[in-house]
Length: 448
Ligand code: FAD
Image (cartoon, rainbow, N blue to C red; front, side, top):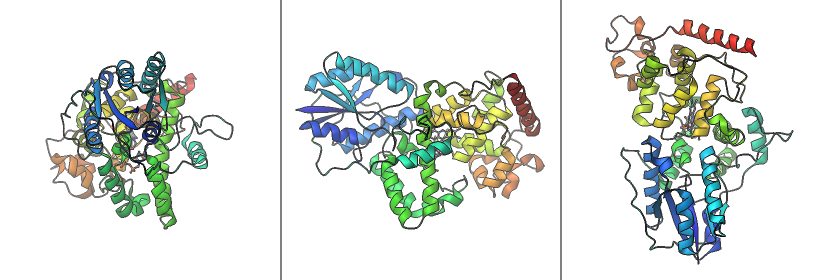
């Protein structure tokens, strides 16, 4: 007998409850990946990274991966019928599209007396499972994180029994990624985690906000594709914490909790992906953003810390968290552009682009999300640069026009008369736009 496991953003073999469920049910397991035209039509960085990760998974299961292109609601039942499997096993999905797709696949399977069996999720605690003491979904992060810790999470799923893969099914070719996406796959993810845990975690609490130093884990990308599961990280963190690095592990655990919080918010409010959660705050934005949006995208705003971040995004498909906050704030509060325009650009370029973390990160910055981050907080791009890139190293790395400016002077090139002439003048005056943002906020508040 054979069962089917359909991989989506759980591209690993270890700590994989849905795979173990499939294996426990039958002698052989079909490893299936579907090339869904709806997800793959746009040539984004994420698409390439996902394809590369699928290729690594195919290697990890000795080439036994079955790739099929087409609408999952057609393709998945066809594979189940081919091998006579009653069940198709998946890791749960909580994005709006993922839920619609899975409902359609479930309906199609049921029409043939088969079923879609969901085991686990990409999170330590499945979205929707954590509630506050009042039994309601948490609106703010602190309440969520408290309840999330109290809820706790299972240990990594392990099993001594090996999986026997079903071979010989027809498979479509796997497109090659069109760009270089760096190291991929489960083994690389584990290596990255172990290196971070052993060499960097101890300094994480103090240094995580410094984009000039390579102090964060960069696990957002492997987590996005499920090459590693947060359960694996949390189990290791408990050991490290017992070893004495309590503050660093608490901070890192909190960051993982942000990821789970945003998935929970999306689960409860699917429309928050692309519209303001706080629609009691009707802010006036420039719709399309025009030239200002273009300058921001290109990393040519004349604010070096912002431009460095936007250029890192384009070059690496990743940006440091502090700089994500500052660049997002700049677009929304200095250029007054509605956040979805920025969120779309991030999602197109980020290798870790994730609708829950990204779009709610944007809403947090804009002050329109569930969390109580005040709209009145406006990041000053120069002060942020001076504080978190104190020697200007980060800016010099990404903005070569300013390479010759010494130290922190790089954050204010307009103060250095002989500064590079090919670097743009600031496109706005920060103090003026800050006041403008606050004035718009006051108008919106008065209206409600
Ligand atoms: P570390 O500091 O090593 O953190 C460990 C892990 O915790 C991360 O890998 C990530 O999974 C999680 N995490 C950390 N901070 C956050 C956070 N604020 N929100 C949610 N999860 C977090 N993260 C994404 O994974 N995908 C996105 O598309 C994304 N877009 C963002 C957009 C904006 C405007 C902002 C402000 C933040 C965004 N983040 C996003 C969150 C955060 O910036 C990245 O997770 C982090 O920079 C990834 O680097 P790291 O793995 O080295 O992080």
